[in-house]
Figure (cartoon, one colour):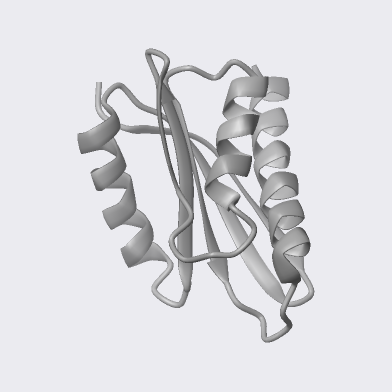
Length: 123
C-alpha cells in the first residue's frame, strides 16, 4: 500500500492559514519523506510543515522551526484518538500576525482535531 490521504481540512487564524492532511501510512521513514515532498510542492509559500506519525507504536514528530511544539501537539492527538498507522501534516502559511507559542499550539491542535474528527465521523 502506498501513502493514502484519508482527509484534509483548513483553518484560518488571524490571517495565518493552516492546511491539514491526514494520511494512512505503513513505514515511518519512507512514507514521511514522500509526504514531505508532496507538501513542499503543494504549499510552496508555507514557512512550516509540521507533522506527527504513529506506526506500530513507533512515533515521530517535527516542529520544523515553528514555536509552540506543534509536532508534540499533533502526536498527542494521534495517541488520543488511537490512530496507529496514521500521519498528520499541517502546513502553515504565515498571515503577518504573530500568534505566540500558545496561539500557535492552539491553532495546530484545533486544525488537527478538526481533520481527525471529520475523518472519524465520515466512517
